[in-house]
Image 1 (cartoon, rainbow, N blue to C red):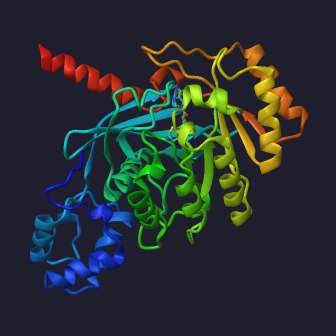
Image 2 (cartoon, rainbow, N blue to C red):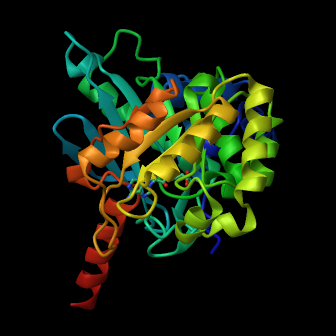
Image 3 (cartoon, helix red, strand yellow):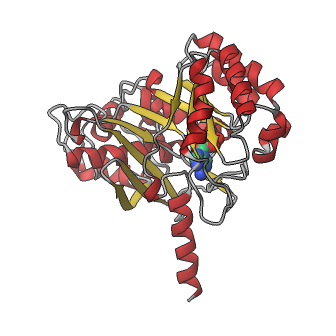
Length: 372
Ligand code: SAH
């Protein structure tokens, strides 16, 4: 289902596209830079804050653009480590944006490293059997403005918590495109959004600090390898053989390992940076020692980093995480091969941090309320 907003979101405009629209509306094009400075550097929340613009121009802008296409519905915190923003879009769709804080020794949470996890679709069509995002199916793609708006909402929140002397800076360290949706299935909007996030007139955020995670859309991985901006890539592998992967990820039928792995290798060689292989550990599904050995061989061949993630249980789904001992035994096979491996001590388990869970719960509550 396609969503056409009444007014296009300002956060989906590039410097050039905004200048062009201003020109067409009879306004001087140089105003585009001033407007975007208000949005991304000064974090203006209303047109009236843009005091170096004339009143008629502010009225024109209000008539022609939606300043912020995502409004904060609520904010859920877990032990000060994971902060989850539930955002509502123009058509009442809900999306999630997560702030993950990694506390550093000797400094307060204010100075912790922050990774922001953003969504690219409402729901998801990939139908991975273990994932909450796909449970209610696919609703629609996000537009570029809605993707960018998630990061501005994070900036608003962080600015309020820790006003910085240089408030122009983005207040986080990394962006991971690992929220709801399959990012590479919404390629054009994603790339437009990331260009805005990266641009000096936008958030000025380095491409090397942005990781795109995919379930394995091979043609799009190859396309991404050709992009000028060098984003990092993470692959949701979750199975070291077609047999195991196919059971839990339907995408493996179209793009089995024999197609996926060479594409990952091509990407990695082009970029000269390590790709990350994500591997959720699900009890009795993909956590055998044989899978560990095969994963080790794949990672070695690709010079890839391996991120092991104990499965987050999802209400209504039967899957469980393996015991800690089993997780460690799996990890040891990779560690013994001197591979770069992390076994995620996962954060936010208590606040439905696994993608799609908070939204799903809220959607269910809405349906229940509507039925009363
Ligand atoms: N569609 C993209 C990005 C979104 S999912 C992708 O597949 O990579 C982000 C990551 O969370 C993926 O690796 C996904 O497999 C994983 N994931 C989904 N549900 C999970 C759960 N319940 N517990 C742990 N990880 C989960």
